[in-house]
Amino acid sequence: MAQVTKGKGGRGARQRILDAAAELFYREGINATGVERLATESSVSKRTLYQHFPSKEAVVEAYLRSIEPRVANPLEPGAQASDQPPRERLLALFETPTGLGAPLRGCPFHNAAVETAGSMPGVRQIVRANKHSVLDALTELARRAGAVDPQLLASQLAVLYEGAASLATSLDDSSPWEQAHQAAETLIDRALTR
Image (cartoon, rainbow, N blue to C red; front, side):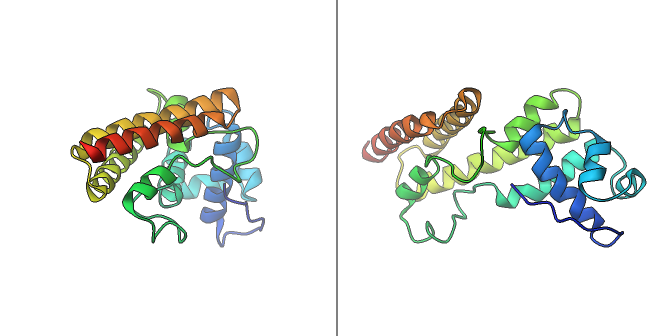
C-alpha cells in the first residue's frame, strides 16, 4: 500500500493521516490500529487528527474513499492492459497479486466490511457502493467482450474474485489466484460461445 511520508507540522497533516491509515489499516487491520498509533505514525497530535477527522470512523471512511481509485477497476486498467481486448482484461483480474508483501491481506474493502461489521454504518455504505461499482464495471466489460449474459458473467467473476482473495488471505498462499484464473478462463469462454 502507500508509504507514509514522515514530516511534522500542520501542512499536509490530513494527507499524512490518510497515508498512515492506508498502510496501517491494510497491513495491521482497522481494529488493531488505534487513534494514538495513527497520530504517531502520521506525525501529528491526536488533537490535529481530530481536527481533520471527528472520529475513527471518519478516518476509515476517508481512507476507503482515498484508496478507491487505486483499487483495480476492470474498466480503467493500468497502462499495460489498456490495449488488451476485453476478454484479456477480465482475465487480468485474476493474475496473482504482486508487491503486496507478506502475509497476503486481500481486498481492503472486504477487510473493512468484516472488521467493522455492524459498528460503522458509513463504512458499510462505502463498501457496498464499491462492490456495486465493481459489478457494474465487470458487467460493462463482459458486454464489450461479447458475453450473452454480461450480468451473469460479471456476478460469477465477482464471486470468484472475492473467493480467491479471501482464500489466498486465509491461507497466506497465492495459489488460489492461479486456480481462480483457470476457472475464470472457463467461465469467460463458456459465456462468449453460447
